[in-house]
Amino acid sequence: MTSPTVLLIDDEPLLLNSLERLLEDDFFVLKTTNQAHAIELAQMYQPVVAMSDQRMPGMLGHQLLERIKTISPKTMRILLTGYADLEATVGSMNYSEIFRYISKPWKADKLLETVHLAANIHARMQEVQQAVLNGSNKKFVVPKVLVVCSQLSDIDAISHALVGYDVKTASSAGRAILHLQEEEIAVLLLISISDSARVSEIEFLSLARRLCPETVPIFLSNGTDKETALRLINESSTFRYLSKNIKVQDLKEVVRQALAQHEWLKQQPFKNRHRIEEEIADLRDDNPTPKTLSELIENLRKRNDAKPNY
Image 1 (cartoon, rainbow, N blue to C red):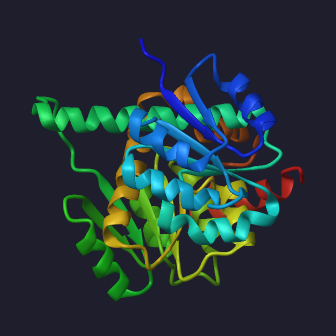
Image 2 (cartoon, rainbow, N blue to C red):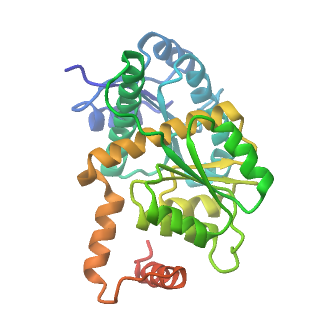
Image 3 (cartoon, rainbow, N blue to C red):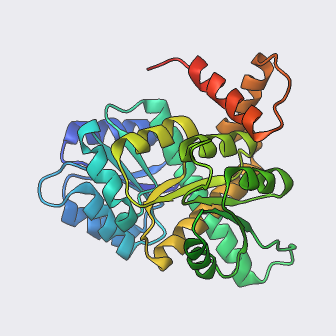
């Protein structure tokens, strides 16, 4: 079986060599310090994953990944960035559709896990595409996407963009939680909630992730900022954090990627760290299972308070 191809770009040869040693046992690694060469390699090999440093002379990493997206659109793109780069990086995500960003200095096990996840999602997207082309006899269930927004005009616009999906809508956290508890929601698209004074958007996403670990959350907001991005990662593992003004075609692609991850998580629950983490937390919790939204939020806040600070 051929190993998935990973393209690494960094202007520091020592860092490139370190990344290569980490990945070479599981992947076919291409590496370069030259951005023009990286574009040539991407065009020639169509890599499964491309990983670039953000701060490089000439073209910034997210700009390079945007170029790679154009010539190899199925490539999963990962950005390596220092903490100081985070705000600018988040602001550019809706242009280059970064799959993940990894802060420096990285943890080797987490970086390797992220690259494997990207490769698995890429493979699943290929399988889904091939099944469609082959006219698979497997029963096809229209994926359900839950759009949570307090503005009717935004709900209408998103629903129109997602023709082909079974779109469910909710304006409040309470109504959205009912959908999540009663139906198999593949992708959760959050814009805003009408009861945000009662529960914040980030708390809602965290709660949704706990209740439905296979549901893949996407947060569309009026703007993006560093503090929110950090909380979305640390508290809810949000799949994407994007501007609400994202182009329709780009939104469709992000939802397709989220759907691929949802299918992968369903098929391999033992690899779903969100489900495993929740099961462990349940074993440690002596309190009765919360049922109402207020009880769920109270339980969530107690668990977050009990987490160690890093």
